[in-house]
Image 1 (cartoon, rainbow, N blue to C red):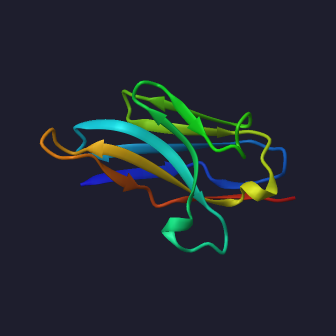
Image 2 (cartoon, rainbow, N blue to C red):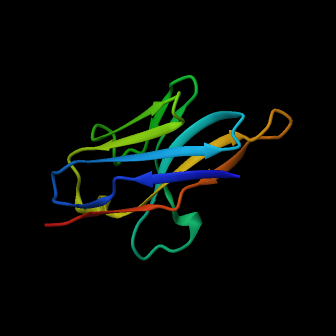
Length: 125
């Protein structure tokens, strides 16, 4: 059993900042990557989640074009925690943000994905 617990969402004015956190716990043998996805209001299907940013074990980072230069992903490897620093927020950043982890629960098992419950970010004046 693996659990991802997100925190840090809320209401912020345009141009403001927020920092999201996601802590992973449970049966984790190794983690390949952690990242953030978002689902805008009105988009209910999991397939409609948009990749925001990911960070792999080797430290490489990947960002959606829409957030480059404004968002920064980082990770605390000792705490199995990933962060998303969001600056210069825009109304179009409004969404439920989901943490994702690609991991192996045991050395004998293939990698799989786990998702957090989501945290709402609302950018509005």
